[in-house]
Image (cartoon, rainbow, N blue to C red; front, side, top):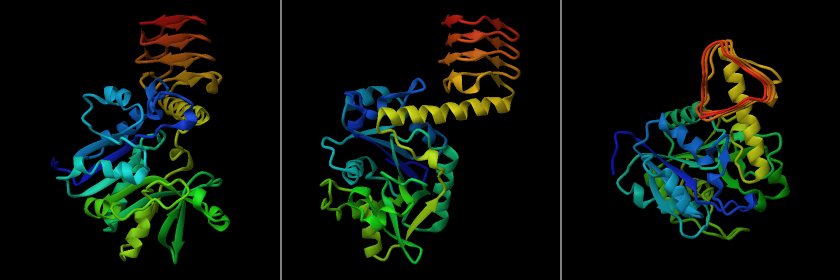
Length: 321
């Protein structure tokens, strides 16, 4: 399958998400009214991709049903044997593709499209076969550390396999890679599972590249809150806080006033207008649209409705389409 773009993407969405304590696949848990994976796929819609591949596994039927008709190639990882194995499962879908491959995790809904686009451009300009999106964190706990020598990346070590000295490193792997397809699938054949988890780590392609004399680029563009993965209910709540703050700030730039700013719940599909005032503890869901100059009273609940310009919605109102 060939496209006009020199890029393809692989979204890793096969993980069980053990810490979610749920039978629902991790990427299908909802964040502001939408599955987590929806935000990741949105990132790719405006980027020029010849092929978009999603690797599914645990609860794959639910993910498959949701993604039906969305223009993605679905591949199944029958056994969760690690990230390298997950990417290898996508090889058949990309067998006729020759170009650059963007690999991204399906549980990172806070990543910004601009960051991803800048990363892809930087990789193109570098002329390298492999680039990694990195970030420097105040608390790098839980992330794979970037090992450098003379400024050049030599390897990525997972925290559970890292020494005490390596754990003090603050530059981390975000799990997002840009890699030439030819090198990628050739390198995957050389990855073993001699580690604490007994899994095939995608991070090991860095060591393989270095052993072959191939330079590996580390591009530090991501802000700390962009790379947070959702692995638990606490992570989901933290992602909700970040996303709500972004949405409310964006609407204030348009000219919306929020009373008791942090108490307002607003989903991404909601449309507001200039000079709208939203009272404390208001909930706005679905494709609600609020006309210019309208005022929403405290504790109002609106879902999928349209409010005309200049309207006054009394406190404690419930309006549902």
